[in-house]
Length: 256
Image 1 (cartoon, helix red, strand yellow):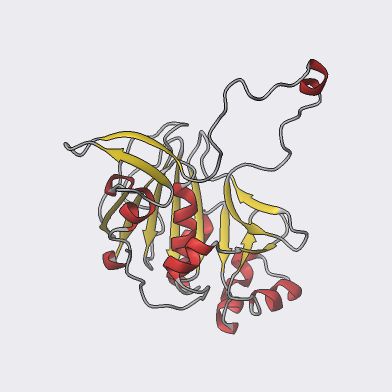
Image 2: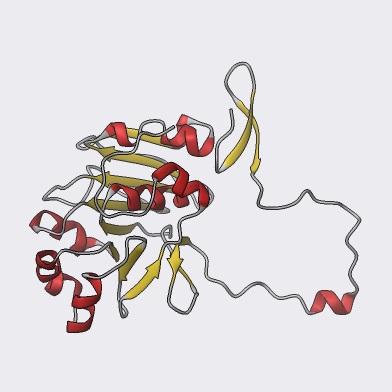
């Protein structure tokens, strides 16, 4: 079986024998590419930022989040299932494993097999289940808490190269703990009462208060230590085919 992020060859005993990226790089032609020493000295690493690609800003600059670091990282999303699934899908492309703690398992069951060709990469567990998983710089872990809860922290201790994504559908008092402990907060379009409730938490100015109420369906507002960033997620063809058109409120989309 093959997935969207990876292509895998599976032996009869079910073990994966080989995996490679799909369609991102052409097959190498060893010995066919020759460059002079002068040309090689002109080569420089690209200047783009690394991390989870969230979207593009008004200047068409890539907006990323450094999700995995030597210390635990926490991110909160105020939005719907569509945005949550897009963020998790893009996190898988970083090589991460995902544990989803959720009250709606039907929305996540089969996600790993569709995306990567294996159920091992995305584990779905009940919302109140304890969390614990090994991680490393080459095998980071994302734990998704998908559900409104008065406490934002999962049961368990986040370690190095681990991140938590707290998904709350509405910005109410239930979301306050998750937002307070997050170093990055992403929001989809807010209702007027949500924007008012979030003003002291997010530090909304009069301008940003108006902007978060008028975000387009494919946009996210990002709040961290600096000024708010407004980005277009620009979902890919695969993301649109699987998750449907961008939206804030939606019913669970069955994973294929």
